[in-house]
Image 1 (tube, rainbow, N blue to C red):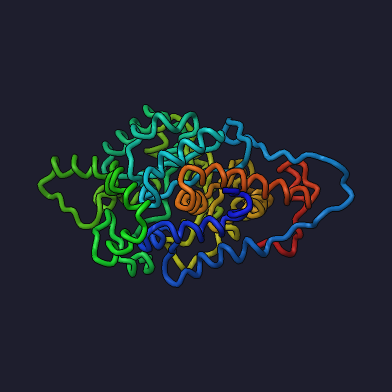
Image 2: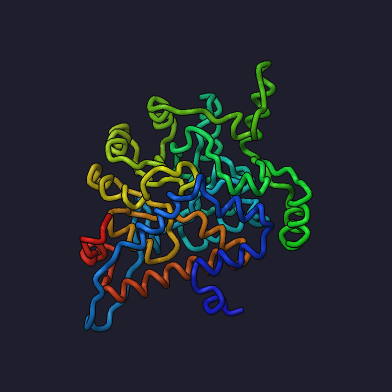
Length: 386
């Protein structure tokens, strides 16, 4: 199979994944919340950003390498954490972490992954980032961080843009609960997708392994334990600023805060010792009434000019990565795209996506006459910027 010909864009991987996985699985990954207006804004605002093309530059090479938080990377992007990643394709977390390790780019494991940190220790290489939804109990926080560190995760991501549950109507219409509870419609869809179903049965029904571990400890400790919702709901707290400072004191490696959309919040976090700010609106999955993530980026860069910035939300190709870098991001993370890739092509998907994104970056850098990533901002057309 000639992957470059059959799947030259992320949209091709998305279409293929939609055919290969049950309907409820695709709806879980692909959906946002509300009327999905914020998700649409993410894409629309990115596409409005334009660069001046260049001519007669002569022969030159494009360098896509970068340094971020003291580490060197061949490309300025990685795989963002996605909850219940293993539902998208059997062994998805293992496939993605191994592919990222081989490519030398970051892999983010979610607190609500379907595996434990111990499970991924053999596959993450030196590329493990651990994402935390902060547990309500301080002792669980400390233990979770210890387990992450002991199993090779060197960078901590604290997600702060999920203070309440979102509606995610498409997911509800697909009757997906977490962990999944199979009904007749889901069973029929599973039968129509035998490769996913057989692999999932062999691997085990996806569940929130790490959260379940702590939920079980909570149950053993407390007479007041109640299990409304999934294990992630049971252990997750609603953190405040003091909690961030507490985590900073516990974690001795690089620490990012994900879900920042305002410059003043970024500035306050940097003052607390946070190493990098992650500009994100959760790809429109939490709130339908906010700004596009890319629209927040310039103001945050202005507020914290010397702080490393990560960007996500709405990225669907190499040109989008260049747009975010030109507006002030130092690194870009993609969640859906990597999961479309693994759903579409299994183990072949993530390496193909990484190559596709880099090729797209080089092609567009060449059109602009940009030899390095540092050349991008000078090619921007100012009136198209958010």
